[in-house]
Length: 203
Image (cartoon, rainbow, N blue to C red; front, side, top):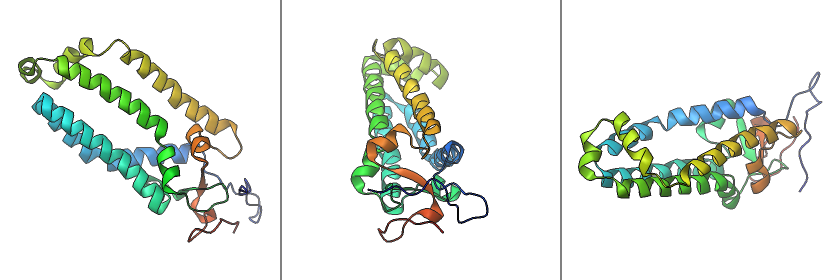
């Protein structure tokens, strides 16, 4: 599959086709704001009981990943990307498929699955009475010793993953993060994306 050119020289000067780090980062921030009601729901549920915390966190995570997969598959962009006028496409600017929308999130999904497993282990060892008897700050302190020994290792590896994503995005000419290479996608400024499944083009 052919790639779109990195710059559109049809303008006076040049105009980048592929979206850089800061628009993509800002789009993530906007998406997090959009998901704030779910975070509030998670906070309320987490404080009520251990059973509710397990159920509520699982629902919130499924909805959060579902949001990203749904919007990237059907629209090529989450709400944050729509606001920033950038779009996820194939290298030639055509629309991505469902498999690619899932693959873009596959590493994050794996890490979240490990985080949730660690949390479930901690919650399973917690006393229901002690859990609800303290406020949320004390509760976090109460749960920390109950996490499995491998949890900190996973957390440190996830930070390395996030920094690697940004690093790779900055060092290649098409601004592709590692998850773009995994899924075979690029992120372009919206005007260069194709329509109705067609390849993109310069304007």
